[in-house]
Length: 112
Image 1 (tube, rainbow, N blue to C red):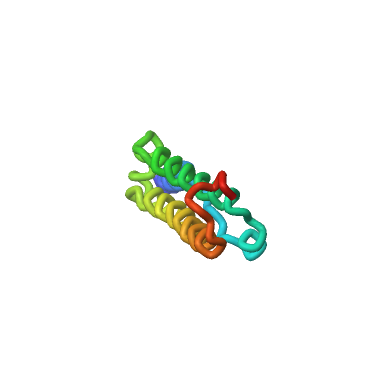
Image 2 (image 1 turned 60 degrees about the vertical axis):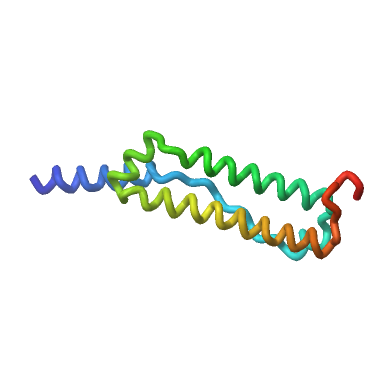
């Protein structure tokens, strides 16, 4: 009986690990990027960050993995992963907007 319990417990731990979604993180804006990015590159990077946020929101919709995640950790792991991914993108967006203001970029990047 103990062996069966151990096997089931270990199996559930492995399944739960596979059920947690992973979106990745967006890095902080490096000093090199701050110095070398043009206004157009800042605009492109802002667009990428918006795309990343849309991707995370779309992928975080309920799926079969969520059922296993709920059984394993009540879905807390997926919730934390989504929040961390969105937070990393939001921090990068804020840094890019600061850089855009510092470089006095216009709202129309094609004029740069």
